[in-house]
Amino acid sequence: MPKPNVVAAKALPFKRTPFIAVSGMLDFSQNYFEMLSLPLSYDVDLNRLAQHYRNLQRVVHPDRFASASEQEKRLSMQAVTLLNEAYSVLKDPLKRAFYLLQLKGIHSGAEHKTSGDAAFLMQQMELREKLESIHDTPDAWADLSSLMNEIESLFAALSDEFKALMAEPDEEKLQQAEQVVLKMQFVDKLRHEAEETEAKLENNR
Image (cartoon, rainbow, N blue to C red; front, top):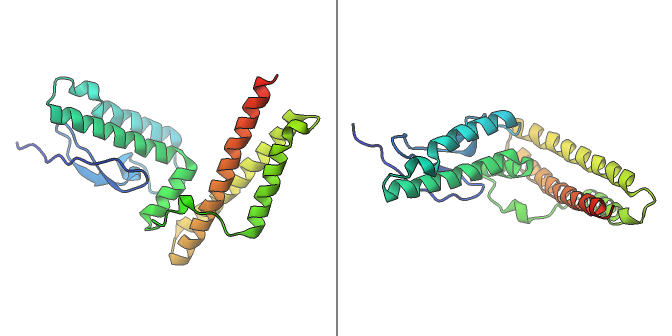
């Protein structure tokens, strides 16, 4: 039986990229959801994602190709790189949202844009001011906990809005979804800053 063609692919973030087939596996060109046997949806079963990732990782792991040809070793490494990228994107809500937009044809570099919603930007400024003044409050831990809960609630609300827009997307809804993702990006950055503040408070105990 002839060996299947093996197509080398460079792993590029947030793009539809051919998967590498190695050592007898059939080649296939799939998006990250298809690759990891998940439905094309913003909602992802993280346990199922991790399980499918581990299963595929065992199949393409370089240790399995220790005595293989140099080409197969190289393809194995490329497959691992692509698989790791797919897992990294799908397990992260913000990266997953950007990736879903790209699958729908939104390749405008949205991750480098900012939201034009003045009211939202004012809200973000107020939240950031609260975060920056945490160290000066009498009960920094309680205030930080309350602020982090507020940030999480805001991100969850935006995620729900994005999911609703992507349920049956048309051109108008895709544009709206892109704006929602820009807001999610702001909130996600603020969340990371809050986590850094939490770590600093812990170190100063």
